[in-house]
Length: 478
Image 1 (cartoon, rainbow, N blue to C red):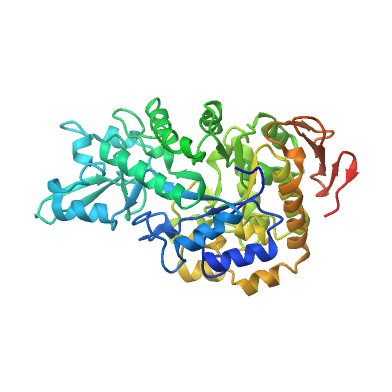
Image 2: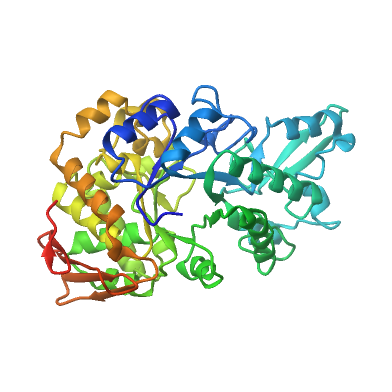
């Protein structure tokens, strides 16, 4: 896996399909990107691809396996594997519905009634579960033989939970992962990983030690192929950092809110603390296909600072409103705020470029969402058309629109910044990082490669939003 910049994009968000996406990237970003997180491109029944029907096909509207494999020849590819669930319209679930106990797939799904002992679940059991919705995570199953059952259902109505304990599911995992690797995937993102293990008398979220057993099983599958796993977890940073302590890559979902706090208040101290304790073996984000995570920054910002940052976001952000992260706009997670990062900063070019510069110098590997790549503003037309809060940050760019956006100075400077990060050897993951705060509103981040031959420094002032970059003492011009 390369230590470069990774793009996060849907297959049809920069052009109509995978083929057009590659044309856009090859035209504008071959020097600025090394990796692509291609969000789910499989046939799906909902959640913008995260309710997959199957993993052995590419959605015909998005292209073919040949298109995906061609993209993989030029960029390291990451894809999503929904370890917790699969679509209720999948062949496996439909076979279970049709054949019930005679189905070869009956043990793939987590049967709600078989999970609980007699007389349970009680209300106390339901209350204990770490839930994504305000009711028990269960859905009815109406079998063709006229009987009715129930299945675990953590997320949307389209996503049926898998029983990770069963041999059937473990074989499904192995077959699916090896198929994805065969088609050119270098990194597998384990979506909703922390919800996958359910155990009596726990909150069913990141259940230890069983979660490590599951991760170990998946690691054993991909290790012979040299493929990296990236478990996806939105939670308190101490839980996320357990992954790094066990030698796995993790996500930095805390940086977006901490950095907003720094930029809004002109104060570098919380950011400096976070950068000092962050692991190097991580992927950093400012924006993704979901909203900005709030829970991820808990205790890194005080409750008052979190509230202050959220309030300031609604105050100074461009068209950022509380209602866009509410049930009225089908928001899935009340702990996320729906906005583009550029609009969170009031569509301010200087603040946005400083935010990206910090991300490039932060420990780990930077991921840049496609809307962020083009300094995209909140898409209110798509938001109102769909009444889906997260679509405020999911604009569909045509190839011609990308050409037009590339003319904006902020996009050109961001491109140059990404190209610098993509090739500069000072950002060696085996190297060192030093973080200093000359004053409360300034920060200096120094990255040095393992042999000490390359040193890159970012000096930034959060009160003025000005920054400079040097390498071995020489200025870098964007």
